[in-house]
Image (tube, rainbow, N blue to C red):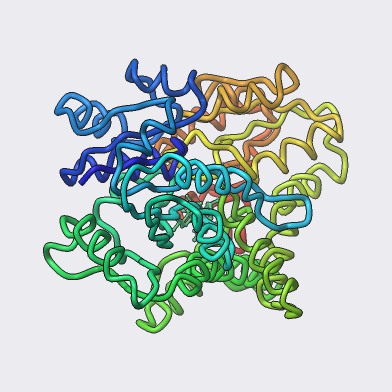
Length: 435
Ligand code: UGA
């Protein structure tokens, strides 16, 4: 099967390399010639565990190639995936200009009957919009919606071992159905994972999944605040509710608010779609509202410890990325905290295993960036854990206590809540947990 993946961001690059791994012949195409040149030289544009190996192996074995010639890549393919970005517009809706551009390129350059698959996260109605754009093409173009559910940091595994594969295809379109079934067959050897549905339902499923996950997090963040008021412990409440099989244990961790390029954008986009159709999706609205408030929680706690004045204080952050195992800092709670600290005149020194380059690009020298976590904490009056990287889980607390100016630990992910740090001489505070 000859596949063309247009767009080499998270979704495009991981899925393109993933399809190559299953035996398809894949060209990942992008209009960004610099990015393609780097990919050809084996340089990954993102940090994602396992991706370089996956790409290198499939390139070496001749199944994966990169091209900045999008028209030719489309002309040679039987299946073309749209894996381009759909950034949020100021009104909360999705900017579909890159999606439109691919659809028009397919209409113009396809050389045979082909399947055009939308993998980018797109609002309901995009499938119809794309169909309209390819209607006049000289060859039949079958339009399919196939949202991607991979998580940054675990993307390769998510692609190759998905819980399910959602494929939205018109019921009468047997051609598209056969192509999609063949393409995904290697990922369904132990059991059929494809959930077939109509395109609008597939498009909506993506937003509903992300919003529901975000909703669980926001609810637990609200409950964490309540725990602090009533003397309960959100860690124990999580275990208590998460062991109900109907609820399940995942995505119930209180923290500094969800970030990344997906949850905030997708919750807003779902709300926007509702409003376009005269519906106010109150739960989705509240999910985002609670998250906005939660992103200020670490700063509020810090300020409280400094009697409302952080000016001139040296504050250390561990973790800038929005989650571990990624260098992505987009919409990270760390940014909200850093911005608030800088605005109030604090001195911020931060460490992150992978996110320092992105932090430097955003802050320049307004934030001191440390390549060693202990160097960041040295002489600090507070250490704030923002991202739960593995290397922060069991640090040398003795070293921290003796080198920090003031032994104040603010644990945004509750990873140290069981260490009884109070007995070691620390002032410790988590999110909804007892010290
Ligand atoms: C999310 C979804 O999990 C993927 O299924 C989806 O494909 C992806 O968005 C997307 O739409 O492309 P991702 O944003 O990479 O994936 O990361 P998550 O692991 O979902 O984490 C999102 C945020 O929620 C992070 O800031 C994380 O720290 C936070 N989180 C997660 C919590 O605060 N508590 C939890 O219990 C879980």
